[in-house]
Image (cartoon, rainbow, N blue to C red; front, side, top):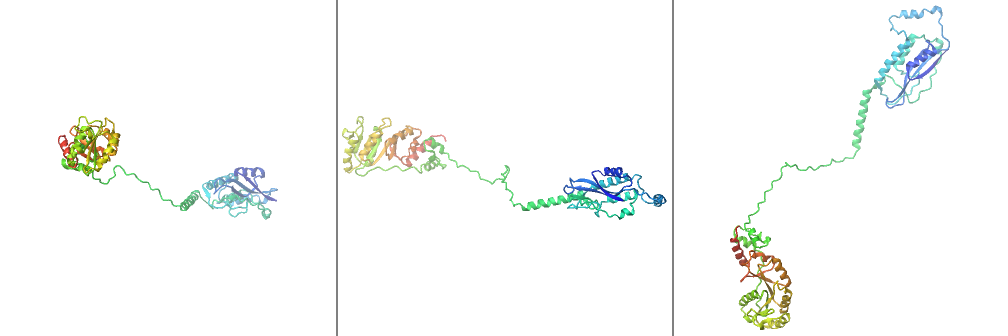
Length: 437
């Protein structure tokens, strides 16, 4: 009685050789399947071959009368396809050809289909071909064997996939499908992202870029500025000399010069003139003539009256004597002029300030030497306390008479004439004419 066997292996040639060695040449091949297990989308799968054969327990020996039948059947079909002398070699050739076709294609199925070995309707063409070859080579099973119901082997695992050449798709088609799926995934990912505006890069203007036209600043010609600075005038004042003519330029420079203070000429007023004795007395006499007072209203505060025309009765020895004299002065009906001897060399500025305070001076003038350094003069003036104006001496002896303007005090007198814008303008224009500008 025939029985069916299921053989498994990784090499179809080894399975066929095993069948011939174990069961002889009368074995019938029912089906031959190639099964792939695991993997992803047809890649990286492990494959094996399953061979179903039918073997007789006792070889069926045909009757002698029917012995020539095979030869007659073969002779009666001369037009049939010629078969190989060795059926095993033919089976191997067909299997290799099918394996080459399967290697050039990839299964396009989305999910693996479990197949029962020997009972699936969509067997691979190789199995059909192998069955035909085997039926032509080996004798068909007996009627009794065909009547035996076939016992299908256990269902294959869900991971087993029987690949069919007719149902497979080309590797190129599958690659295109994967590319389309990847592009769709990337586009959806881009849509899902939050929109971020591109960063704006500020470009620096190139060196050759066209710039807006800027008119050149033409500095106004000031021909007398440098000359006035050389004469000692403060630079801020000198730069105001913008006129082209000398007189107009100097007048503009002196536009902000403070006016000279007026003489205190009320009854009981006291004008104190601090400075070198002879210079201060000369100025006091000029002022007395302007105030229309006599020599008796000119007093001197000094150690001695020697070398002067001042009587000793008009000398004030110090602050105490000045305070006593002040009572009479303030009750008199005429102003007084008091000279206080004080110079930077004597360094008695504080004593002179005390005398002026004791007299209750209406105004204090200080006589300054134009030839002395401005810093030394400023130091001496600070020691005198409150000073209302200055009288400049030795103007003709200095090359920078306007340097006294740095003292920031009104100028009452220039040498023997009252100071004012007109007097300063005449003095500076005279000096500018003698300079090479």
